[in-house]
Image 1 (tube, one colour):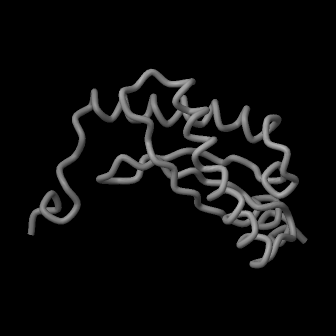
Image 2: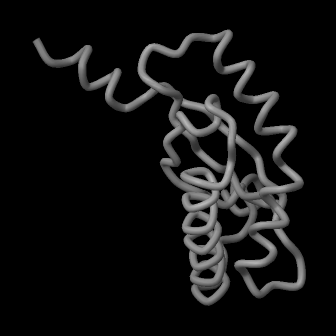
Length: 122
């Protein structure tokens, strides 16, 4: 079976480059906004790891690391706060990029990379 049937055709190089450029622009703006413009300790404690395009859609996946030691309850609180901030964050992105449409944001929380490194080292 042809993989293009299952996963869609590969993007042309120019389209891929534009998508990567958009992801970098969004990542730069979100890093500034999350670092100093949001007065919420739960959100301020997050670390922005990256922004990736979601395959086959107009969404961008924002990958954020929870603080060291954060549990499932903290993740639920953070997701609710991020959902409440979604419109504000999209407005900030719209001002920073020059596109006809502002992408939708999908948030993905992961454990802190430091927590994983600490578990591995003796």
